[in-house]
Amino acid sequence: MSKLATGSLELANRAAELDAEDPLAPYGALFVESEGLVAYLDGNSLGRPLRRTAEEVRRFIDEDWGGRLIRGWDERWLDEPFVLGDRLGAACLGAGPGQTVIADSTTVNLYKLIRAAVELAGGLESSRTEIIADTDNFPTDRYLVEGIAAERGLTIRWIKADPSSGVTPTQAAEAITERTAVVVLSHVAYRSGYLADGPAITELAHRAGALIVWDLCHSAGSVPVALDEWGVDFAAGCTYKYLNGGPGSPAFAYVAERHHEAFRQPVQGWLGRREAFEMASGYGPADGIRRFVSGTPPIFGMLPLRDMLSLVEETGIAAIREKSVKLTEFAIDAHRTLLEPLGVTLASPAEAERRGGHVTLEHPAFRALTQRLWDGGVIPDFRAPQGLRLGLSPLSTSFGEALRGMETVREELSRVI
Ligand SMILES: *Cc1c(COP(=O)(O)O)cnc(C)c1O
Image (cartoon, rainbow, N blue to C red):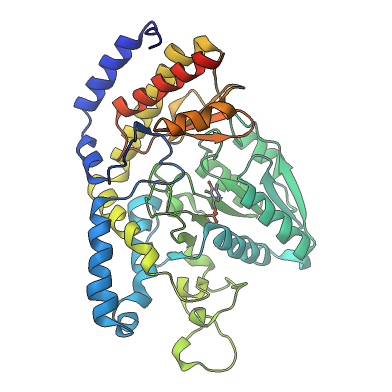
């Protein structure tokens, strides 16, 4: 046993108080118990499964798939991506109906959106020859932008983002010009948790005549977003993070209604065609958001998301954000008491309004420490070169659990330094 850090007792008392007064605390029991788990601090990478999903999968196999067989497509499944998309749009994205779809992976959706956005903005024919991206965005976003720029003969203007912070409106304003076709940014930075100013940066892009694509992977189900109100053009994100859709669950995409008519699908498949089941020659896009679809939707993979959405609809995203802010605030306080004295630094915004649902701490020993933590049932994730990322998913994480995890980090760290 390592000796108790000064302030440990106060932290434990506070965690107990916060848990006792937490209106979302009862939701924790709805998730599947994991054997040997001490603290799950990676709900931002892979959310935990709901117990009810195990029953729902069984029921789906017996009744929907087994019972209805091929009839299921006509009766329900063909519409499911749009029905769930609308529910997600309403519960988490501030998106009115008919603009959100569940489909493909985030990577594929972003490709389709950015590719279409570049064409909408004028592409090669116009003077808009630049895509704006930032150096600290998630790798898939950077690689996609590089690939599309190469395909279309465009230039990338990179914003140099601070890895402990994120892209500020000032940086965006400096980068966006009359040559900008499309701006591609993450709303919540995957590394630092920095919460970008969505409405301000969207407006900056529009004022310059450019279009914007927001990556909402770390926002959806955690931070309220108001896509319609902000006037966002396009957005995409995962459902396996804060939306607990399960490993590799299909992603979502949002296309603002005003772009539907001109949106040109870069992956022309049969299910995005009008009157798809005519199987006719030649492609002509379906109406509305349906033209975003390429092929057969992964219905089975949407089952856990459907269950999680019911919870989010029940609690409301505002209550989730409220607890999320309290959790990250508590984690930062615990860091100052337990870990800062050991040389750990905070690599996330200190102010709550610029912070999403996770907190990143840095120390050179974290790379070696992560496996030991995992072996002991404390599961944060490691982000090179030296970041320990604590994802605090509000519906499944308690304050006591966060503290348990951080106490263990302290113990393990004091052992090796
Ligand atoms: C997790 C994440 C992705 C993942 O994309 P996939 O296609 O699901 O692999 C993309 N962008 C960001 C910002 C992420 O955090």
